[in-house]
Length: 254
Image (tube, rainbow, N blue to C red; front, side):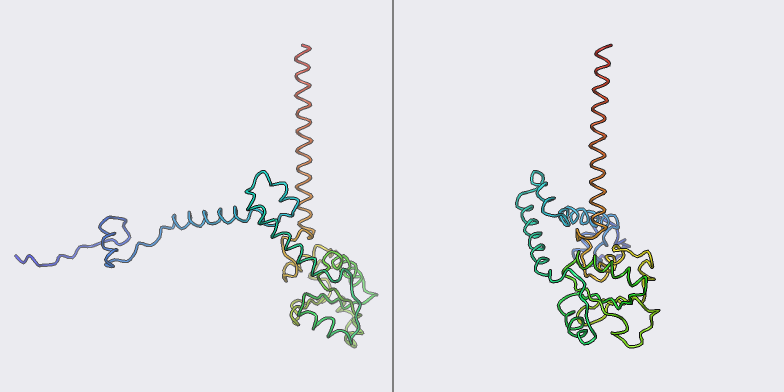
């Protein structure tokens, strides 16, 4: 009998055995692929870790002050400094706060060239048009609310000769000298029912405003809703204590 005869043994490389570990260490079989369950658990752990690390994102200075007793002082101070830097940067960007009327001759300097520095919204308007008047009102609010944005108004006929009245209002957004969004009438922005919230949503989509910005109507609504729930909870608690006191009184007199 030949003692040197090699016997081929069938091995399942996916099995988690000591023998397979030896074979893997010698590169005879490939490394065992990660378990889908393990990958899922790791993904969940990472998601929880990130959620915990970013739990203070979006909170303003007052909200951070309220967390002094709950959070690590150094960690909290880091977020306070971060928020103060954001406020400082925002303050430095505040240049406008109103709608700027422009002429055709000013368009290149006031719109195209300036868009290298920031976002520019242009309303090609028509005073006799209902939607144009609505947009003018909305943009006035936007300009005041987000003074770092440049909002311009130019009569459509003065901007482009024979510009169709049916195309009014036209809203154009510039950034880095490029047109990044253009809307002919308000059809895609809510029509005659368009609101500030609709334009704010557009600003978030083009990254002109951060989605967590506290000035956004949607974020203010969330804060108002949270405050309303808190108030209801307090009132409910007070009523509950009053009822408990009433019950105790009844028991006493009984």
